[in-house]
Length: 180
Image (cartoon, rainbow, N blue to C red; front, side, top):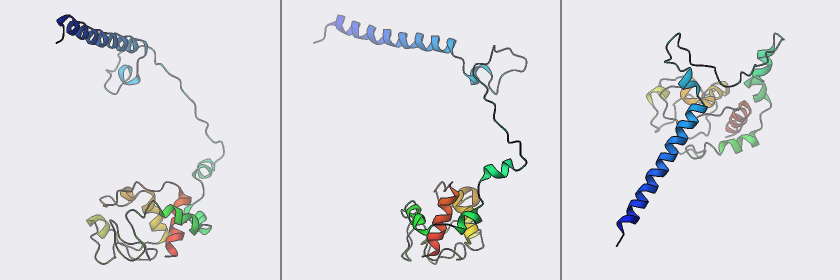
């Protein structure tokens, strides 16, 4: 059996450890104030919370008038003109868990012949109401907008994919899908 003194020592060790962590947390909070504690959204106007800790990093602004256009990069049309279908096949690997290229539907509708096809037109596939109401055709430009942010482009779509942020990946994928 256990000796009561051993149980008491074990309990005291646990309490002592918790007390040590509590004091350590208190000391750290007093040394390092975070923005939410000192200058949060709910701070009363006129309250003095002391000095702000941290550094302000100035951003460099372009002095030329075309600075914003230069940072935006090439347009989809420019990238699509030189798209690589072979690279698009590698990007398609992200799609193949839900979409097939053999004419059969998976979690998503099949993608063979998708470029130029009417939106939500695959027979036998249960589209969301949002996708069924989308209308139009899957032009390269429409596919680009959808693939960049599916839920932002068509709120309510069942497609849970977060999108392809890189314009080259989207252009290459669409070039690959054109060959199917």
